[in-house]
Length: 204
Image (cartoon, rainbow, N blue to C red; front, side, top):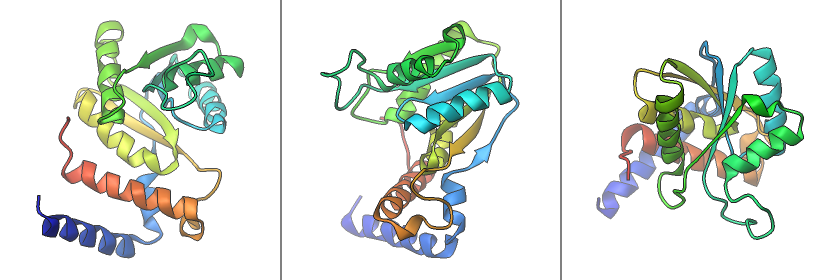
């Protein structure tokens, strides 16, 4: 693609951001549960999302909690865990979660399409161990939710319906994300990622 093509895409994204305004956060951080007994937690989340996952598991009467994730990009020399899926699972157990209802599904891919590859690994596990599953709910943090749902649905295919539970970010919310550097940076970055996945994404 030429530089003019990329500039056109960025211009369209900028205009879309202006038009969406307050609705942008809800698009990027949706909450839409499917009727399911399997809760999937993306591993690269803050500790308070771990607590939210435990509450969701109990309230939703789930049967299984699956953590997904990719290799740690930093800190693996200091801890005995080398994947965010493992780290999330251990954090859940430390918080009192029943380990017999917990499954770790990790991928070794770290360079390209990490969320999509996590979803593909989840699909392989489901095909082998839970072939009858027709729906799951994914829990993740904030504005990453919309993109995660698109990528997991793409990887899992039409036979499995994907629900999404986007836990509100501790530092900003739907009506004030542009008032902080962190909120603005993360929301705009995810908006660009969401736009790219929705219209241009092809697996690496």
